[in-house]
Length: 328
Image 1 (cartoon, helix red, strand yellow):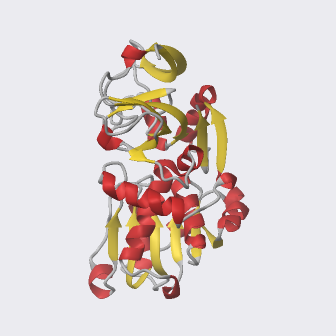
Image 2: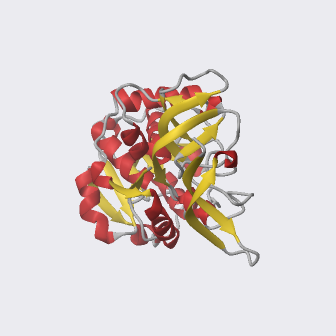
Protein backbone atom coordinates (compact mmCIF):
# COMPACT_ATOMS: atom_id res chain seq x y z
CA UNK A 1 0.00 0.00 0.00
CA UNK A 2 1.57 3.26 -1.20
CA UNK A 3 -1.44 5.54 -1.13
CA UNK A 4 -4.86 5.48 0.53
CA UNK A 5 -8.02 7.58 0.79
CA UNK A 6 -9.09 9.32 3.98
CA UNK A 7 -11.15 12.23 5.24
CA UNK A 8 -8.73 14.99 6.19
CA UNK A 9 -9.53 18.06 8.28
CA UNK A 10 -7.38 21.10 7.57
CA UNK A 11 -7.44 24.57 9.11
CA UNK A 12 -6.63 27.62 6.97
CA UNK A 13 -4.84 30.80 7.98
CA UNK A 14 -8.13 32.36 9.13
CA UNK A 15 -8.77 29.45 11.49
CA UNK A 16 -11.56 27.94 9.39
CA UNK A 17 -11.77 24.18 9.09
CA UNK A 18 -12.62 22.05 6.08
CA UNK A 19 -12.93 18.25 5.90
CA UNK A 20 -12.52 16.60 2.50
CA UNK A 21 -11.72 13.23 1.00
CA UNK A 22 -8.06 13.11 -0.03
CA UNK A 23 -5.57 10.60 -1.40
CA UNK A 24 -2.58 10.37 0.92
CA UNK A 25 0.83 8.78 0.89
CA UNK A 26 1.61 5.92 3.29
CA UNK A 27 4.07 8.26 5.04
CA UNK A 28 1.10 10.27 6.40
CA UNK A 29 0.54 7.48 8.96
CA UNK A 30 2.96 6.26 11.67
CA UNK A 31 5.54 3.77 10.46
CA UNK A 32 5.39 1.50 13.49
CA UNK A 33 2.43 -0.19 15.15
CA UNK A 34 -0.37 -2.29 13.68
CA UNK A 35 -1.36 -1.37 10.13
CA UNK A 36 -5.08 -2.11 9.67
CA UNK A 37 -7.11 -2.02 6.46
CA UNK A 38 -10.37 -0.46 7.63
CA UNK A 39 -13.65 -1.99 6.43
CA UNK A 40 -16.09 0.00 8.57
CA UNK A 41 -16.07 3.02 10.86
CA UNK A 42 -18.86 5.03 12.47
CA UNK A 43 -19.66 8.64 13.31
CA UNK A 44 -19.60 10.03 16.83
CA UNK A 45 -19.99 13.52 18.26
CA UNK A 46 -16.26 13.65 19.01
CA UNK A 47 -15.63 13.11 15.29
CA UNK A 48 -17.86 16.07 14.49
CA UNK A 49 -15.91 18.23 16.94
CA UNK A 50 -12.57 17.07 15.57
CA UNK A 51 -13.72 17.71 11.99
CA UNK A 52 -14.75 21.25 13.01
CA UNK A 53 -11.20 21.98 14.18
CA UNK A 54 -12.01 21.87 17.91
CA UNK A 55 -8.63 22.19 19.65
CA UNK A 56 -10.01 20.60 22.82
CA UNK A 57 -10.40 17.35 20.86
CA UNK A 58 -7.58 17.50 18.32
CA UNK A 59 -4.49 19.66 18.76
CA UNK A 60 -2.69 19.21 15.44
CA UNK A 61 -3.92 19.54 11.85
CA UNK A 62 -4.14 18.28 9.11
CA UNK A 63 -5.86 15.36 10.81
CA UNK A 64 -7.94 12.27 10.01
CA UNK A 65 -10.93 12.09 12.40
CA UNK A 66 -12.75 8.91 13.48
CA UNK A 67 -12.66 7.35 16.95
CA UNK A 68 -13.90 3.96 15.67
CA UNK A 69 -12.47 1.46 13.19
CA UNK A 70 -12.85 -2.22 12.35
CA UNK A 71 -10.99 -4.15 9.72
CA UNK A 72 -8.17 -6.56 8.96
CA UNK A 73 -4.51 -6.49 10.01
CA UNK A 74 -2.14 -5.89 7.10
CA UNK A 75 1.12 -5.89 9.08
CA UNK A 76 2.28 -5.63 12.68
CA UNK A 77 5.85 -4.77 13.61
CA UNK A 78 5.16 -5.86 17.20
CA UNK A 79 4.16 -9.36 15.98
CA UNK A 80 1.16 -9.28 18.35
CA UNK A 81 -1.27 -9.90 15.47
CA UNK A 82 -0.88 -11.96 12.33
CA UNK A 83 -1.84 -10.67 8.90
CA UNK A 84 -5.53 -11.24 8.18
CA UNK A 85 -6.70 -11.04 11.82
CA UNK A 86 -10.03 -9.22 12.14
CA UNK A 87 -9.69 -6.42 14.69
CA UNK A 88 -11.33 -3.27 15.98
CA UNK A 89 -10.15 -0.11 17.71
CA UNK A 90 -12.33 2.20 19.79
CA UNK A 91 -11.20 5.09 21.92
CA UNK A 92 -7.72 5.57 23.35
CA UNK A 93 -6.36 8.45 21.20
CA UNK A 94 -7.73 7.21 17.87
CA UNK A 95 -9.29 10.05 15.89
CA UNK A 96 -8.32 12.61 18.48
CA UNK A 97 -4.58 13.18 18.39
CA UNK A 98 -3.80 10.04 16.39
CA UNK A 99 -5.12 9.74 12.84
CA UNK A 100 -8.48 8.01 12.97
CA UNK A 101 -10.81 5.53 11.39
CA UNK A 102 -12.45 7.62 8.64
CA UNK A 103 -9.75 6.26 6.40
CA UNK A 104 -8.90 3.21 4.33
CA UNK A 105 -5.99 2.49 6.70
CA UNK A 106 -4.98 3.23 10.27
CA UNK A 107 -1.73 2.47 12.08
CA UNK A 108 -1.98 2.25 15.87
CA UNK A 109 -0.20 0.75 18.90
CA UNK A 110 -0.91 -2.95 19.47
CA UNK A 111 -2.29 -2.26 22.94
CA UNK A 112 -5.18 -0.31 21.40
CA UNK A 113 -6.33 -3.24 19.29
CA UNK A 114 -9.06 -5.79 20.13
CA UNK A 115 -9.36 -9.02 18.16
CA UNK A 116 -12.96 -9.33 16.98
CA UNK A 117 -14.76 -12.39 18.40
CA UNK A 118 -15.67 -15.03 15.79
CA UNK A 119 -19.42 -14.43 16.17
CA UNK A 120 -19.10 -10.72 15.32
CA UNK A 121 -18.60 -9.16 11.89
CA UNK A 122 -16.64 -5.94 11.34
CA UNK A 123 -19.92 -4.36 10.21
CA UNK A 124 -21.80 -5.29 13.38
CA UNK A 125 -18.85 -4.23 15.53
CA UNK A 126 -19.07 -0.73 14.06
CA UNK A 127 -22.85 -0.62 14.38
CA UNK A 128 -22.04 -0.78 18.09
CA UNK A 129 -18.80 1.23 17.99
CA UNK A 130 -17.85 3.54 20.84
CA UNK A 131 -21.50 4.41 21.46
CA UNK A 132 -22.44 0.75 21.87
CA UNK A 133 -19.41 -0.06 23.96
CA UNK A 134 -20.32 2.85 26.24
CA UNK A 135 -23.89 1.53 26.53
CA UNK A 136 -22.50 -1.94 27.32
CA UNK A 137 -20.23 -0.50 30.03
CA UNK A 138 -23.16 1.40 31.52
CA UNK A 139 -25.28 -1.77 31.54
CA UNK A 140 -22.45 -3.78 33.06
CA UNK A 141 -22.00 -1.15 35.80
CA UNK A 142 -25.70 -1.23 36.70
CA UNK A 143 -25.72 -5.02 36.85
CA UNK A 144 -22.57 -5.04 38.98
CA UNK A 145 -24.31 -2.66 41.41
CA UNK A 146 -27.29 -4.98 41.90
CA UNK A 147 -29.72 -3.15 39.64
CA UNK A 148 -32.04 -5.90 38.40
CA UNK A 149 -35.15 -6.07 36.24
CA UNK A 150 -37.42 -6.90 39.18
CA UNK A 151 -36.61 -3.65 41.00
CA UNK A 152 -38.36 -1.28 38.61
CA UNK A 153 -37.93 0.95 35.59
CA UNK A 154 -34.62 2.12 34.12
CA UNK A 155 -34.55 5.67 32.76
CA UNK A 156 -32.43 6.43 29.68
CA UNK A 157 -31.74 10.12 29.05
CA UNK A 158 -30.77 11.44 25.63
CA UNK A 159 -32.56 8.38 24.30
CA UNK A 160 -32.50 9.45 20.63
CA UNK A 161 -28.69 9.44 20.45
CA UNK A 162 -26.50 6.46 19.67
CA UNK A 163 -25.74 5.53 23.29
CA UNK A 164 -29.37 6.06 24.27
CA UNK A 165 -30.87 3.96 21.48
CA UNK A 166 -28.47 1.06 21.99
CA UNK A 167 -29.13 1.26 25.74
CA UNK A 168 -32.86 0.89 25.08
CA UNK A 169 -32.26 -2.12 22.84
CA UNK A 170 -29.95 -3.73 25.38
CA UNK A 171 -32.28 -3.14 28.32
CA UNK A 172 -35.15 -4.63 26.34
CA UNK A 173 -32.98 -7.63 25.40
CA UNK A 174 -32.15 -8.24 29.07
CA UNK A 175 -35.77 -8.04 30.22
CA UNK A 176 -35.74 -4.57 31.81
CA UNK A 177 -38.53 -2.04 31.61
CA UNK A 178 -36.96 1.05 30.08
CA UNK A 179 -38.27 4.61 29.95
CA UNK A 180 -36.86 6.99 27.34
CA UNK A 181 -36.25 10.69 27.96
CA UNK A 182 -36.01 12.58 24.67
CA UNK A 183 -36.20 16.11 23.34
CA UNK A 184 -37.32 14.90 19.89
CA UNK A 185 -41.06 14.17 19.96
CA UNK A 186 -40.97 13.10 16.30
CA UNK A 187 -38.96 10.02 17.37
CA UNK A 188 -41.38 8.81 20.04
CA UNK A 189 -42.73 5.95 17.93
CA UNK A 190 -39.20 4.82 17.04
CA UNK A 191 -38.16 4.78 20.70
CA UNK A 192 -41.20 2.72 21.62
CA UNK A 193 -40.34 0.25 18.84
CA UNK A 194 -36.83 -0.10 20.29
CA UNK A 195 -38.29 -1.26 23.58
CA UNK A 196 -39.13 1.81 25.64
CA UNK A 197 -42.28 1.27 27.69
CA UNK A 198 -42.98 5.01 27.47
CA UNK A 199 -41.31 8.24 26.37
CA UNK A 200 -40.94 11.32 28.57
CA UNK A 201 -40.57 14.86 27.27
CA UNK A 202 -37.15 16.30 27.99
CA UNK A 203 -38.66 19.78 28.18
CA UNK A 204 -41.24 18.82 30.79
CA UNK A 205 -38.61 16.96 32.78
CA UNK A 206 -36.41 20.06 32.85
CA UNK A 207 -39.25 22.35 33.94
CA UNK A 208 -40.05 20.44 37.15
CA UNK A 209 -39.79 22.67 40.25
CA UNK A 210 -36.49 22.25 42.08
CA UNK A 211 -36.73 20.04 45.15
CA UNK A 212 -34.24 18.41 47.48
CA UNK A 213 -35.76 15.01 46.64
CA UNK A 214 -38.51 13.76 44.33
CA UNK A 215 -40.66 10.66 44.63
CA UNK A 216 -38.66 7.48 44.11
CA UNK A 217 -39.42 6.41 40.53
CA UNK A 218 -36.48 4.55 38.95
CA UNK A 219 -34.42 1.55 39.97
CA UNK A 220 -31.59 2.82 37.82
CA UNK A 221 -30.67 5.07 34.92
CA UNK A 222 -28.26 5.53 32.05
CA UNK A 223 -27.56 9.24 31.69
CA UNK A 224 -26.00 10.77 28.57
CA UNK A 225 -26.86 14.39 29.36
CA UNK A 226 -25.32 15.44 32.68
CA UNK A 227 -26.09 18.84 34.17
CA UNK A 228 -29.53 19.53 35.63
CA UNK A 229 -30.97 16.40 34.02
CA UNK A 230 -28.56 14.20 35.95
CA UNK A 231 -29.44 16.07 39.15
CA UNK A 232 -33.11 15.30 38.61
CA UNK A 233 -32.36 11.66 37.82
CA UNK A 234 -30.37 11.19 41.02
CA UNK A 235 -33.17 12.73 43.08
CA UNK A 236 -35.67 10.27 41.55
CA UNK A 237 -33.78 7.02 42.11
CA UNK A 238 -35.24 4.40 44.39
CA UNK A 239 -33.46 3.32 47.55
CA UNK A 240 -30.17 1.65 46.56
CA UNK A 241 -30.58 2.69 42.93
CA UNK A 242 -27.73 3.68 40.62
CA UNK A 243 -27.17 5.85 37.58
CA UNK A 244 -24.44 5.15 35.02
CA UNK A 245 -23.13 8.57 33.93
CA UNK A 246 -21.64 8.63 30.44
CA UNK A 247 -22.36 12.04 28.90
CA UNK A 248 -22.36 15.77 29.49
CA UNK A 249 -24.28 17.17 26.53
CA UNK A 250 -26.43 19.32 28.83
CA UNK A 251 -23.69 20.53 31.15
CA UNK A 252 -20.88 19.62 33.51
CA UNK A 253 -22.04 21.28 36.73
CA UNK A 254 -24.00 19.35 39.38
CA UNK A 255 -25.89 21.63 41.80
CA UNK A 256 -26.71 18.74 44.07
CA UNK A 257 -27.08 18.16 47.80
CA UNK A 258 -26.02 14.92 49.48
CA UNK A 259 -29.56 13.87 50.46
CA UNK A 260 -30.03 11.20 47.76
CA UNK A 261 -26.75 9.54 48.72
CA UNK A 262 -27.26 9.62 52.47
CA UNK A 263 -31.01 9.13 52.77
CA UNK A 264 -31.52 6.74 49.85
CA UNK A 265 -28.11 5.17 49.35
CA UNK A 266 -28.02 5.91 45.63
CA UNK A 267 -24.87 5.69 43.54
CA UNK A 268 -23.42 7.57 40.57
CA UNK A 269 -21.25 5.33 38.40
CA UNK A 270 -18.83 7.07 36.06
CA UNK A 271 -18.49 5.51 32.59
CA UNK A 272 -15.56 6.36 30.32
CA UNK A 273 -14.96 3.90 27.53
CA UNK A 274 -12.05 5.56 25.70
CA UNK A 275 -9.21 4.70 28.08
CA UNK A 276 -10.76 1.70 29.81
CA UNK A 277 -8.30 -1.21 30.12
CA UNK A 278 -7.98 -3.26 26.95
CA UNK A 279 -8.79 -6.48 28.82
CA UNK A 280 -12.11 -5.01 29.98
CA UNK A 281 -12.95 -3.91 26.44
CA UNK A 282 -12.17 -7.41 25.17
CA UNK A 283 -14.40 -8.92 27.85
CA UNK A 284 -17.34 -6.73 26.84
CA UNK A 285 -16.86 -7.34 23.12
CA UNK A 286 -17.06 -11.07 23.81
CA UNK A 287 -20.29 -10.49 25.71
CA UNK A 288 -21.66 -8.35 22.86
CA UNK A 289 -20.79 -11.09 20.37
CA UNK A 290 -22.16 -14.04 22.31
CA UNK A 291 -24.71 -12.91 24.92
CA UNK A 292 -25.85 -9.36 24.24
CA UNK A 293 -26.61 -10.01 20.58
CA UNK A 294 -28.76 -7.23 19.08
CA UNK A 295 -30.03 -6.40 15.62
CA UNK A 296 -29.15 -2.72 15.28
CA UNK A 297 -30.12 -2.29 11.63
CA UNK A 298 -33.13 -0.15 12.51
CA UNK A 299 -31.04 2.50 14.27
CA UNK A 300 -28.07 2.51 11.88
CA UNK A 301 -27.86 4.33 8.58
CA UNK A 302 -25.04 3.11 6.35
CA UNK A 303 -23.16 5.81 4.45
CA UNK A 304 -20.01 6.04 2.33
CA UNK A 305 -16.80 7.75 3.36
CA UNK A 306 -17.35 10.67 0.99
CA UNK A 307 -20.77 11.35 2.54
CA UNK A 308 -19.45 11.60 6.10
CA UNK A 309 -18.67 15.38 6.19
CA UNK A 310 -22.35 16.18 5.57
CA UNK A 311 -23.49 13.96 8.43
CA UNK A 312 -20.79 15.31 10.75
CA UNK A 313 -22.18 18.81 10.15
CA UNK A 314 -25.67 17.56 11.00
CA UNK A 315 -24.34 16.14 14.27
CA UNK A 316 -22.94 19.52 15.25
CA UNK A 317 -26.26 21.14 14.38
CA UNK A 318 -28.14 18.69 16.63
CA UNK A 319 -30.20 17.31 13.73
CA UNK A 320 -29.02 13.71 13.84
CA UNK A 321 -30.23 10.64 15.66
CA UNK A 322 -29.20 7.03 16.03
CA UNK A 323 -26.00 5.66 14.51
CA UNK A 324 -24.16 6.31 11.24
CA UNK A 325 -22.20 3.33 9.95
CA UNK A 326 -19.45 4.30 7.50
CA UNK A 327 -18.52 1.74 4.85
CA UNK A 328 -14.90 2.25 3.92
